[in-house]
Image (cartoon, rainbow, N blue to C red; front, side, top):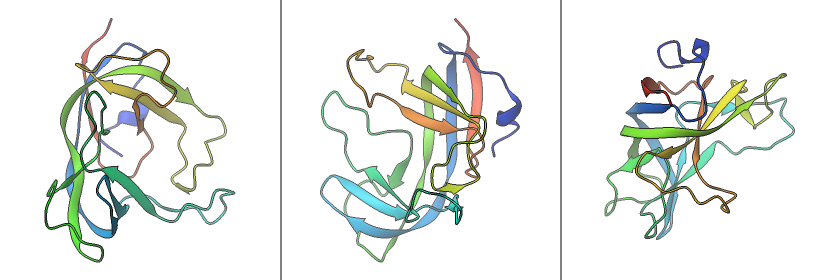
Length: 155
């Protein structure tokens, strides 16, 4: 977990600077739109009702007007092949919290640790579509990924 982020209190509307140093990941599958990687941080929850396979799909290139999400792979294009490896991380990104999920007991999401709090965020410069159900990406405050979060501004 990044520098005490689980103990902080965040609010909808907060502007954050987020990042995660890149980690080496095994590439499971490559399509024109996504790279599926063996997630280097969470481990499969053997007691979960959700059968997560340990993989996470990361968009290679977002379509015009869409946001691909926080985590990105390096290299972005080219030499990505199943069975190979890449780096996965979050480049420094300014985001705004658009919602917060709090779970007691922690949410069964298929991996460990199970999250108590998840921030739903969008890049600061990305327009929010109030009709989009899948808008935003999540930051799991209990994640094993070393995500760094800095509060930049509070509305």
